[in-house]
Image 1 (cartoon, protein in one colour):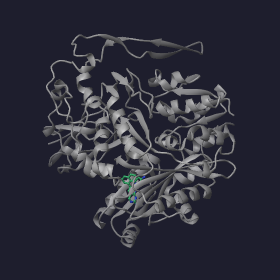
Image 2: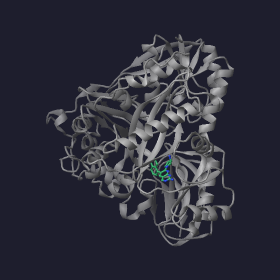
Image 3: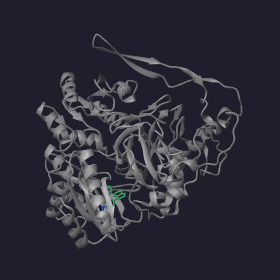
Image 4: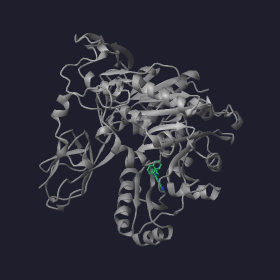
Length: 617
Ligand code: MV4
């Protein structure tokens, strides 16, 4: 086995991989950005190296990461998910430097990165694909002809896309031109590739994905499916396995497609074959050549450690089990607890976690890098914790998940916990008929914010009714100090008022039985200090706020694109610019008919919360 493995990632997945390294007896090397000095992935590693450069960019710095890995004596690099995990150049650079990339071959990453090519390969292998093109489309006329051939609605997709980026749904011919331009622009700006293709758009599909793992001896097995239909704007919110109310024949079709897909490309690592189920049919969608966020639910029902097995096969070992050994047991649910406000259109909620306590109970696993005092940074995604719960059947798993969600204590910022509690009570969720746009189209409108209560004092039952402010020790914060190229770990604890001053606001999330019904209190001062919602155009809520035509950013982010010019006439609801924060792209819309008066930002510019973007008079 490898003796030393570098983890080219941060956060919970870095910690998860470090754990697998330690189980295998390998030392784990962490890398970290300046902003991540105090991160738990740094303190859990055996050795940690500071990356030179901007915190938002360093985890993508291939030459630097490969260089450090060589210097540190790593034999292999695990990329986690996100960042460089599906970057074929990185996989190649690791191999060229004489190390093992813990993932599939660079050519496989490259091929699966092109959705057009992966569709072509899968079709040739006999895997069912969504009706559509397997060649890129370059011009509007061809697009029109093909859209008519397949019939509306159609989806225009960036070939280099994935996860919803560069996806446009078109209902009628008049929308084709703008959709083509939009998909091309997103493909170019996110992936440096403007190539697009067309698919028949399937209404209300379920998102079923199959976990596979292969070794370097030609074996490929599947670890059954995950249902990831609970999403919002392509961000998964809850995943579970097995998929509820799924016909066993369709399930078997998905398994067969996944193994066939893996074998046809010589896959040797952990991977996921994403598909859609619509009207009793299964269709291949795309293949993810990495370990996924939601891999733990598969581990819970199969008992197989996917990350450890992934490292073992990268070393050249045969899979330690056969397809027949994969005998699932029970049901597992994962809730992605994000620093987002579900009642403000899931607006990112960066800031400091004032209190963080995980549920401690049987059948519950929490994968997280969070701690009291943890800062949610605007450079990275908003995942705070993955709550993973097992039950003998779905009902038992749901009951346990609700109990675990209610005993999670996260204060200081908004989280998706109240959303999860409401989702688990939802009829469509309970009977297993939820589809991919259900949360956005149906559930979001019904989400109930816990009722606001004027709460002058900060007393909750957590302090046993006492209004005294006690001092408590926060989890100690770890610092890494470098002196003469040597690493020292220093631990500092600080004294803060017990519970902090944000208790009133955040007990809403952690205490409400069925959210909305309990006596959760919302800090009124916070509410009052915000512009009233009537002044915020609804589609912009969470992204920008408009007061008398002045549009201000509601969050720290980056201006991706400006779609209008000064002096241009605009209409109510028209897209003005695109902001990105915490990996989410949001459109800022005009809330009135008028004229663009002044544009105060430039593309690429970083903006703070409350910063003036532009004004419409
Ligand atoms: C689709 C589709 C319906 N029909 N393609 C969204 C992200 C990317 N992975 C593919 N996506 C979709 N492609 C056709 N032809 C619906 C979606 C889709 C979706 C897919 C998987 C998981 C969640 C989704 C949410 C909305 C739309």
